[in-house]
Amino acid sequence: MSIAGTGTGSIVRSPLEVADYFAESGYPRSLLTGSATGDDDGTADDADLLDRFDDARPCGRSFPPPVGRLDTPGVEVGHHAGVGEDDGKQAWRERVWAEMSVAHVARFPGAKGRIPNFVGAEKAAKLLEDTEPWRRAEALKSNPDSPQLPVRAAALAAGKTVVMAVPKLRTPEPFLLLDPDRLTVAPRRAASISGADEHGEPVGVDAVPRLDLVVCGSVCVNRQGARLGKGGGFSDLELALGVETGWIDEHTTIVTTVHPVQVVDDELPETDHDFRLDLIVTPDEVIRCPSASRPPGILWDHLDAEKIEAIPALARRRPKQ
Image (tube, rainbow, N blue to C red; front, side, top):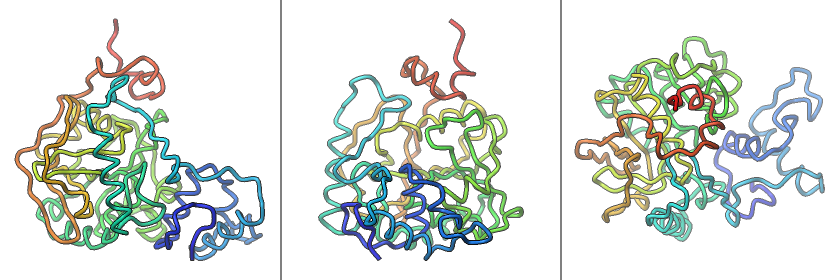
């Protein structure tokens, strides 16, 4: 089933991806619950979600269009992204997004402007499960993006604690903790953005457990472990908070799952606040990178006052002048 009005022409692979995408785009919460159709228990199954989204837009309802469409990526500047900073990173992002689109390896809702969901994401997650860092991990943090949904679901199914960040770290308790022993829904549903929001426990920076593994989303990587995200800078900030607080240390493995198109042989531009990867996992191989570099913590001189005020966890830790 295709989603009308998204401009991607893609085939929807996962109803949960659709639910998360439209929830983040400002669509009424009633679309995600049984209240839209009068279900007594106020819930909806995945197939019903797809029907609601397909039904809604052609009927001319005055819902806002989805954010982050292919023609309007709307990448925001976040932590550690300097004012006017270009340094060649965006050119690499645009190149990889275009190559993924041409190769037809980007899933709904397309590549541009985001951490792209890719064909083979499930296979990459399976390959990650065969690594030693995965086997010994008891707790991990993962980005909330669609290509890493199979990783998060597999972690919960294996009894691992999963931590996810609240989008843009905008709340005083900016992380959601998913305890597999306390879940009342299937791991894959709990691991989705909307599922984590409903079933995760909000925790502050100081309450995050020590992490054995950090899973991050990427737009572009190389075999030396350099990585480019979508340009928001929040992955850098989350890692910096973890380093400062102690739940990320030299024993924490940093990993990403990507499509082979996203792995380049060239050097990638890096700045002082960027971190490097220990492992890169594609559907076909596990790439072990040289020793990873990590920032020592928050680089306050890379942040402006507006960004600090927008993130409560930063505002509370801001050094006194």
